[in-house]
Length: 238
View 1 (cartoon, rainbow, N blue to C red):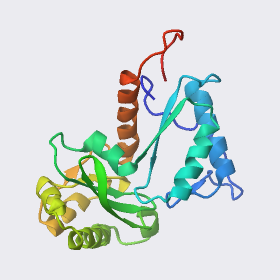
View 2: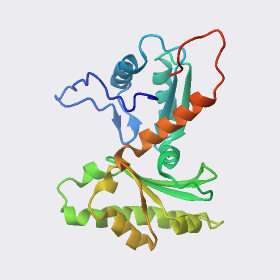
View 3: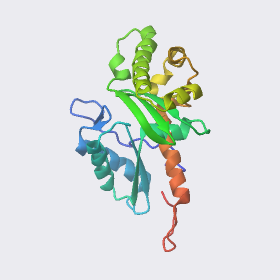
View 4: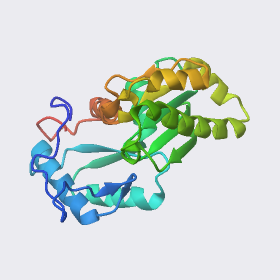
């Protein structure tokens, strides 16, 4: 939130098994009711009861289907905000960690439950691959093997995109160096192993586990700075 930074759920609930609520699995909303409660608590803490002059940026996995994007929009609309801006997690990561120069960009996101590789051209998604596996699926694996396993997954996805690339965008993105985000980027030697597999440098995002949400925050701040202010209203946009 502009001016306040990251705001967690102030009163995290508990699921029926005694664990924390997890209404989103593999990038999909699986429990809309619980998700609505969680978002409502965060909105109460961040925005207060009057949300008529507020804007929310929603980021989603790059290959999230229309059904899941629609479900997320419906939940956010129930919060009473003025506007909801929806974008992919890859575009959000690029806003925070991507190089400033133009041209194709490859974003690799090593998450807890998803692994994604996305090719952006002109800021838009040109191609993407997703593996429904992540760090949570590697529990119990020898830590020394983690870079190899993650590297194989990423290399398979990028190789698949390379085969379907008719305009050389993947080649250009690799020359520039892919951006690495997600909690998996914090594992020892993951960055170095991917660089060796791809034969190019890899750009490690600052604080990779929060790259997407920080990029979404930057986009939100830009929207708030450039939108027109109604003359009859007072106070600060949120």
